[in-house]
Length: 168
Image 1 (cartoon, rainbow, N blue to C red):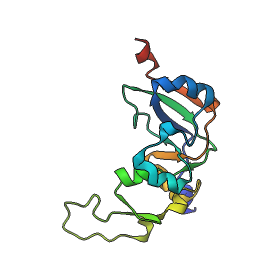
Image 2 (cartoon, one colour; image 1 turned 45 degrees about the vertical axis):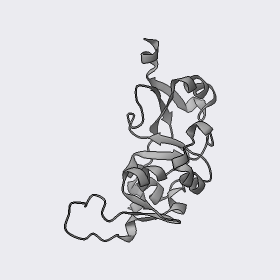
Image 3 (cartoon, rainbow, N blue to C red; image 1 turned 90 degrees about the horizontal axis):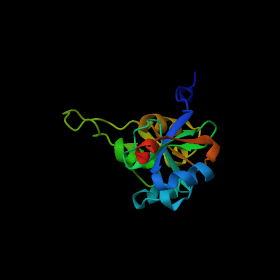
Image 4 (tube, one colour; image 1 turned 180 degrees about the horizontal axis):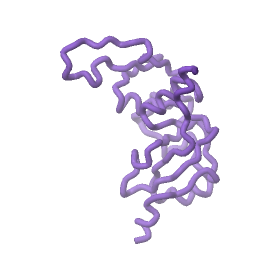
């Protein structure tokens, strides 16, 4: 069994959006390079992807709150890459010009022993942003999020939460 086969791409993921955008998304789909998805903090990652991707989560409640509508997305066969900002922001990965590596102190801040960085925790951007690589799949499993590098047609999207809240 190959190492990369341990990481299976999810079939369903979720995307949270403002309730004012739901009608347009359900009609036109989700689009890469949308200014709505753009964040200044994510500019460095968008340069690595070559586009402004659509961020998705395996967990429905990851980005969903009382002001947003949760969308269920069929991602089977879509181009999913690792979530670079997710790795950098929540999982102790340090950003370098050509790669990310796991901060050796992450999770060991209170330990007295020294921790070495192993090569397996050094992930090159080229592999992280290439859908289907073990690095991209590893990042998706670790962060429980992904960056979709293509438009998502409306037929793959359904609103599943907050619609009832807005009707009250």
